[in-house]
Amino acid sequence: MKSISVFLRLKGRLLLLVLSVFFSFGTISECLADADTVTVDGMAGIQDNPSISRDNAIKDALRKAVEQAVGMMVSAESIVENAALVRDNIYSKTQGYIKQYKIVKEAPAQNVYLVTVLAVIGISDLKNDLDALGLLQARVGKPRTLFMVVEQHVGRDSSHYLSAGEIGTVEAALKEEFMNKEFNVIDRTTVTGVLPADSAGVVPSDAIVRETGRKTGAEIVIKSSALVKEGARTPGSPVGSYLADIAASAIRVDNGQVLASGRGQGAARHVAQNVGENNALDQAARDVGKKLIDQIIAKWVVETSGAQLTQITIRGLNDLQDLLKVKEYISGQLRGVQNIIQRSYGNGVAVLDISAASNAQQLGDEIVAKKIPHMSLNVTGVTAHTLEMVFTATADGK
Image 1 (spheres, helix red, strand yellow):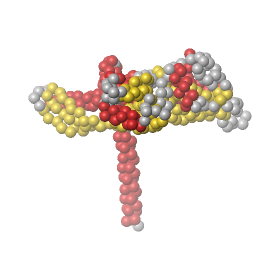
Image 2: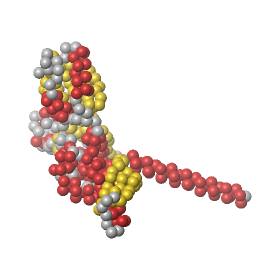
Image 3: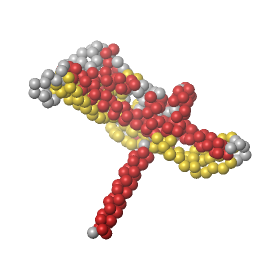
Image 4: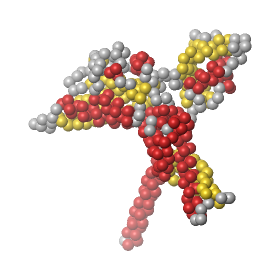
C-alpha cells in the first residue's frame, strides 16, 4: 500500500509539472507571437569600470533595436517632424518594449566597448504608443473617417437613421473611441444632402457606403447596425434590464476593402428605459470600437512595414497583347513590385492588384516620370490605394 501511495504522489507531481510546462509554453508562445526579433550593434566609450562600459553598450544596442522597429512602422519624415514626441514618449521607454535579449557578441575595442544584441521587441505595446501619438495615422495619410449608424430601439420594428443634426449614443461613443486614437473624424451633422434621411430601413449596402464616403471626402466609413432590446424584468421591480448588440465593419472607400469587422455587446439596468438603453448601447459601441481600432491599426502596421496592395484599372486596351505589355512593364520596370494578380479583363478594361513596396501615389508618380517604349500610360486618377490609367499604343513611347 505504501508503494502505491508513493507512486500516486509521484504521478500527481509529474502531472503538475507537465501542466506547468504546458501553460508556461503557451504563455511564451503568445508573447513571442506579438514580437519582432532584430539584431543590432551597440557601442559605448571605455570607462574606468568595464562593467559600466558594457552596460552602456547594451543600452545603446537596445535603443537602436527600438529605433529600428519604429522605422518599420513610421516614415522617416514623420519621425523627424515629431522628433521630440518620439524621443520623450518612445525612446525614453526602451526597456519597456524589450521582451528579452541575448548578447551575441561582445568585445572591447580601441576606446570603445562593442556588443551585438539579439532583441525581441513587443510590437503591440510599441504600436499602441505610436498610435497614441498619431504617427501611424500620419504615415497612412490620416484618412478621414465617417460613421454611418442605424439603430433599432425597444418598441421599434425596424432600424432607422437619426435626423440630421442628431448624434446618437452609438455614434458618439464610436467617435470618442476613434478620436482618442487620433483618427481624423468627419462630423456627419455638418454633411447635408448626402447621407440617408431619417427613415425606416436596413443597413446600407457596401456600394451605398462607398458612394456616401466619396461624396463626403471620407477614405474610411464605419458602417454599424445597433439593436437594443429589453431583458427579463424582476416581477414587481421598476428596474428594467436592457441588452445591446452592435455589428460593425470598417470599409475603405476607394477599393472597397474591409479593414475590420466585429461585434460588441452591452448590458444595463435602470428605472428609466431611455437611460438603460443608452447605457447598454454605449457599452456595446465602445466594445466594438476598440476591436475595430485594433484591427485597423494592425492592418496599417503590416502595410507600412511591408508590401502594399494597389488596385490598378487600365482602360483603352485593344487586346490581351496590350495588357501583357503593361504587366511586363509594371513587373520589370517599377520599383518594389512583388506580385501582379489579374482580377478581370473585358471591353478594353483590365483590373490588376499590385503588391509592391511603393504605395499607389508613388507608383503613379513613377509611371508619369518615365518614358515607356511603344506605349503611353496616362494616369487619370489616384487615391491612397487605387490607380486609374488609359493605355495608348505609340511608336516612340512619348
